Length: 287
Image 1: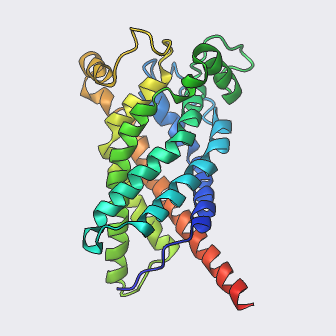
Image 2 (image 1 turned 180 degrees about the vertical axis):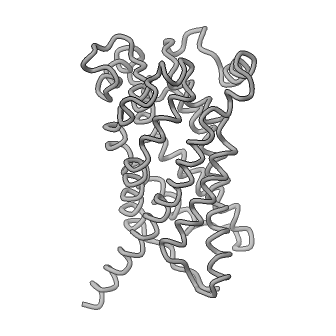
């Protein structure tokens, strides 16, 4: 079966930026609900259903470059991979994992600011600025310095690598199988969106405990590097001992719904953007 040629670096960069911004803005309220459910202070103390767009400013700044870096890295590594085609699942895992680590260099600071703003976890803010992205960023900088913007970086990587290692091989597998079933060389954007939705939902549900750990780490107000800051394992055991298994799957429903729907928009928008850019370039070459 023939396959659509891999997008160029510039196509991946532009399409990734469009996809990232689209999904983050559209599904931000669900992300806020999920973050507040996972917060140690409790859903209603963290804000409940009030102000569900708090922290959206940080997402607007970080979405496009984060997703652009991810897809440009992912597609480039897929294209140059020396791994044989019959073992292409390994290529997808490695490419997605490296791309995710690279993207997290941009994404984690915006995630930290967003999580603090969503739960108003900045105790020294005034009433007017409490819960804003700017107030959260100022608090982080004052309290922990630049390193504070990377609080939870290791935890995020621990969550994202298993997530992408599940999502993207599944996504590529579903695309190939569906194209074969339809007797077509490639899929339309809306069909790729369905594949992205299913793959994202499965990966989201399975990695929820890691997402809880990431959220708790980013919301921790203890100064970084102090002796009372728990390790990833001790934090996991603390949640399990004090709150039970249920706490490790807090927010699993909104997370799965959000990422399932978001996967459809994210990957659908990406495929649509790549196909549109390819069409534009072909028309320009003809002219």
